[in-house]
Amino acid sequence: MARGILTHMDNNNPELDTVFLAFADSTRRAVLRRLGEGPASVSDLAAPFDMALPPFMKHIRTLENAGLITTEKVGRVRICELNPEKYAAVEDWLKDQRRHWASRYRKLDQLLEQMKDKDR
Amino acid sequence: MARGILTHMDNNNPELDTVFLAFADSTRRAVLRRLGEGPASVSDLAAPFDMALPPFMKHIRTLENAGLITTEKVGRVRICELNPEKYAAVEDWLKDQRRHWASRYRKLDQLLEQMKDKDR
DNA sequence: CCATTACTTACCGCAAGGGATAAGTATTAG
DNA sequence: CTAATACTTATCCCTTGCGGTAAGTAATGG
Image 1 (tube, chains in turn red, yellow, orange, purple):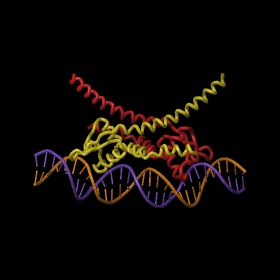
Image 2 (cartoon, chains in turn purple, orange, cyan, green):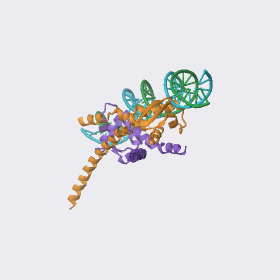
Image 3 (tube, rainbow over the protein chains, first blue to last red):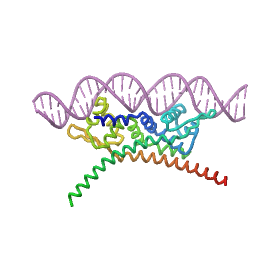
Image 4 (cartoon, rainbow over the protein chains, first blue to last red):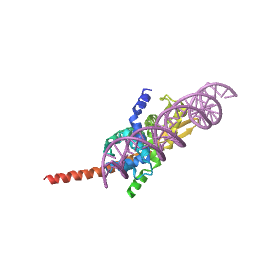
């Protein structure tokens, strides 16, 4: 019971919600990939997409709110830059998942070992 | 231009959309973590949550549609099991992202090296 | 057999997401 | 100073997501 609640708490992380939601769109993933090559203006980022600027800006805001990018207004241009550190939260969560599988598969491995021992 | 379109195509992957969207909910993340310990019935999975069964079942369907779990009806019970292989798509995408940063930082490193050379 | 269990189906409601257009503001090039 | 640029703000529309209830079905315990 306590474990169940704790498990729920561990994953009840709004930060992960916004980050994963930001990843869940092809336009935003493409923007992130482009920003991996270096900073760019909103117009430059928007150029490859067949989309009006206002909705595109919403994607930029989504990425910024998720903490995946930072933006700065320079004159009339807004420069966007990747914030790689934010990916750590995702990697940590995935690592934690794997840690659980590992313990399970270890048990399975032990079981298989025991069966091998009996066969001898 | 061609690169821009290609970049867009590479990330235009509906599979990633559904997987990341599945991750973008604390209830589903908790279910995934619980399933990391081994298979479980829908009722067992639902027990820790203050939620009616029909909406909870929708989360299960979301995870199944994303390919993150498999389910099987045994009598009147539906058994859910984790499908760890699906995580590979996510890890590949993250790895691809890091690969891009790496090339960028390598360029930055080269630049810094050149500046150091000038100082000598 | 009959009641319980474990979903399942069929709705409803509200909020948020992804797109569009129209019109506004602040820089900056000429 | 004027015009063009680069957003920005304000709406709107439609779909999807996340929650709920009510009622149905199939399997099982007694």
